[in-house]
Each structure stands twice: as structure tokens, then as C-alpha cells.
Length: 454
Image 1 (tube, rainbow, N blue to C red):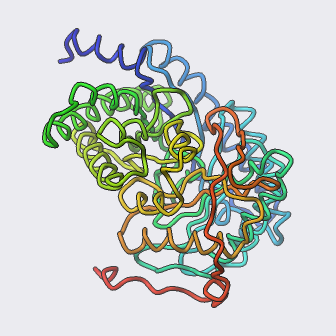
Image 2 (image 1 turned 60 degrees about the vertical axis):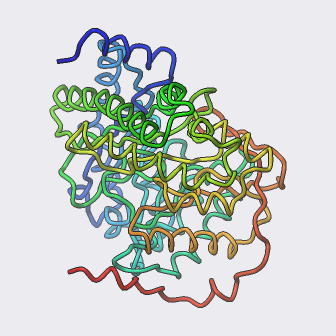
């Protein structure tokens, strides 16, 4: 049973330490919306999402009010649109019409983002996949709430370098299409390796083809809670440090479990997973970087940073798994630069570089996330960075991702404002030595030897 002390403790986490349910994400299968007629596809998509998601936002608000737990975002993820639109969409512009339908329905049901404008091309691209990918710049420029993700590699299949090369070009093109808004289109576009089917977090959420017709996934976040707990463990050894993180992660996950079960029951939709990710916000005290500094670093990026992050990520997972039978998604620690004040400060101070961030991604949840780079960065350079990050995921059998924002018209040291949850970021320098000959080879990097476990 939960005692009064634990109730008070949870209330304190919410009121003073930025504990929140970051998102309730409703996954919806659109496989039954497929048709050879484009108008019919759009009509089917609109009707299906409207019908299934009509009560999502109001239900989230009710739970928030009754339990006093902040639920920051209500979101939708859908079946990868390259699969849904493949039969009807003959050109990139055809796919853009579906993006506009998704945006319209997102506005109408009241969610802040809808994910799944996606293609899974880790081994090769169909015509539909390529058309969707080439439509991304226009789709993200003409919509507000649509998020896009492309999976270009996996441990089982290797890395599709043709897709990696194309995504470098698409990121640059997306930046150009939205240059009047500091290239914000790129903030809604992520390139994956080993993308999970049940991720509730944007921009990478999509509803996997192995999922049920509709599913409720919940993402919980509480960097401020973990940091506050660690203040009490200053000077203690690693055993005490690890136990503190585990116990705190357990408590945070139980809050998410409660919300997920309530949302599932009220909407009549099965509960999928809890994603326990320490996802920061620009709010002071809600920073993963601050946790790492509480562990003992002067600044994130100092020697010891990767080890501290590995410890944090592992203990968060251990605590979360004990609290729920269905922990999934990306669970662990996110290290986006623009969304984390401590990370921003570390970059500004010169403690944190792109190369150190890449090393940190070997042991954390995702990858190079929400990083602003100079607007004149070459497409092949971006492709090279994607290839490096995807290789880390492929070899280590983990999810990795890249969300780079080449900010057109801005250079190193300048700052770009995205607003809201996306925050702001200093433009970081990128290694300018060329990798064109590598990126332009074409073909596929084969899967590593440890992928053959059948």
C-alpha cells in the first residue's frame, strides 16, 4: 500500500522538482486506410484518427486534474506513412497531401504533435519510401504538428548508405524550406538506427506494424527529481549513488504506470508501454546535465562524463523495470542540447563538443539530438555524421538517432531560438574535413557478425 509519506513525497516531486508525465501518446494503425485512390486515403486517415483520438486530450486533462499530475503533451503516432500511402502516392507532392491531412486532424483533436510521417529503409528503399523522403522538406514546411522519422539502419540489416546520403540532402533542403523560422523544420525530423515500434517521444514516434490497432504509450520524465535525490548522496560511494538513482526511477515510473492505466481504462484502448526517459526541458532544474554535474563533474564534457552517463542510464532502466512490467520505447537518459539548460551552458563554456556528444551517445538513450550546426554545413558532412551515429547503434545493438539543425544564415557561436519545449541552442562547430568520397560510394554497409543469432 502507498502510505501518506509517499503521497507527500510524490506531491513534492511534482510541485518543486519538475516531475511530470511528458506525454500520453496514442498509437493508431492506419493499415486499414490504404486505398489506391489518394482522396480516399486522406478521407480514411482523417476519419480513423478523428474517431479513435477524439477523447484523448479531454481524458488526459481529466486525469491531470483528478490526480494532480502534470501531463505536458498529448500526442498521436501512426503507421509509417510510406506504407499507408504507397498504393496511392505516385509523387512526393502526393505524400504532402497526407501530411496536410495529418496536420489538420492533429489541430482538430488538439494534440501538439503527430508522428509517423516515416519510412523504414534500413536495407533498401521502395519507390514509395523514396517519394515520401523527398517530400519531407515541403511536408514539414507546410505543416505545424507533423513529425517525421526515417530508419536507415539496424543491427540485423546493416546501414543503407544510399538512404544516409539522401537524408543529408533532405536535412539541408528542409533547413532551406524553413529558413525564415531558423530552420525549425529540422527539429521535427530524426534519422534512426534500430528505431523502436513503441516510442512515445517525438520526433521519432511512429506506430509499428507489430502493434495493435490502437495503443496507449506513456512517457515519464523527472530529471529534477533525480538531481534533488542525488544532493542527499553527495560524497557517498557509487553503491549509494546507484541505489539512490534506482529508487528514484522506481517512484517516477509508478506515477507513469498510474496515468497509463487510467488513460487505458477511460479510453478503452490497451496499455502498451511506459517509456521512462529522463527527458529535459529548458526549465531551470529540469536538466540531465545538472544530474551529471551532481554526480561529480564540473561541467558536462569533462573527463568522466561518458562513465557518469552510462551509470545514470543503467540505474534508471533498472529502477524503471522493477516498477512496471511493460517498460519500453527509449527508456534512459536523453541528451538534447537545445532542450537542456545545463547542456547549453556546457557548450557555451567550451566544455562540450560534438565529438564528446557522439561518445556519450554510446551509452545513453538516443543520440545526437537537437543540435544546431552552421547553415553552410555540406549535405555530405551531415550524412557522414549520420553514418557515424548509425554505426554506433548498429554495432552496439541499441537505438541511436540524429536530429541536426543546420541553421541557414547562422554560424558558430550564434544562438537560435526555437521556443517552447524545443528551447534554444548555440550553433556548434562541425569538423569541416570532407567525407564526400565515402558518402558517395553508394550501397550498403553490411550487418555486423553478431547480428546472426537466428
